Image (cartoon, rainbow, N blue to C red):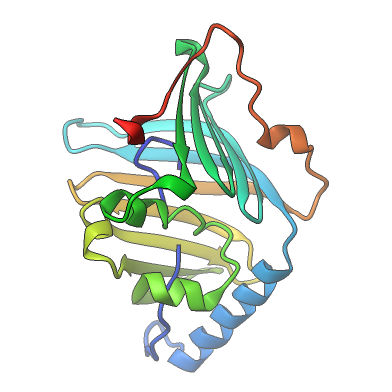
Length: 225
């Protein structure tokens, strides 16, 4: 996930008949997935991020770590981290340690429009409420592959689709943990995350979600421009 335009959440269930499974079977798996997510207090894992850009012949591949709690997350891209994204209920902070720079996005002050719709996609990796996801997304397809169920979603908001055309979420059907996410941007680029070593409900240090920026960092608020 974490580049500036990496936002993601939610969907409407239809009855499909694909890959030998009836729509009712999918619906039962979706319900189980939501049940597991609702009971989650936290999850953490490693990820491999593949960014495909229309202007490059070869995709950009990076590795990182992620920690997620309801309403909060921390993504570290690169080892050592080149980009850190912190989210709390009121703010998104993107930190570039090598550049000694950070960008602050107050979530409660975003005006109605494309940016607000894009920011509404932030929580796809830890959905807490099916109704909210159904409000934000339409389910285009559901495909079972090996031990995963992959959903392709489209933002309902026309303004959000100016940023992201589709969102793909895949989860393991044995333990209902996240397997992969992908965002297909309106310009044809893609951002794909494969998750590994996912651990559920392990204690998480609260300091991970707090940014103590050094005094020599430059902090900007792009939405105020």
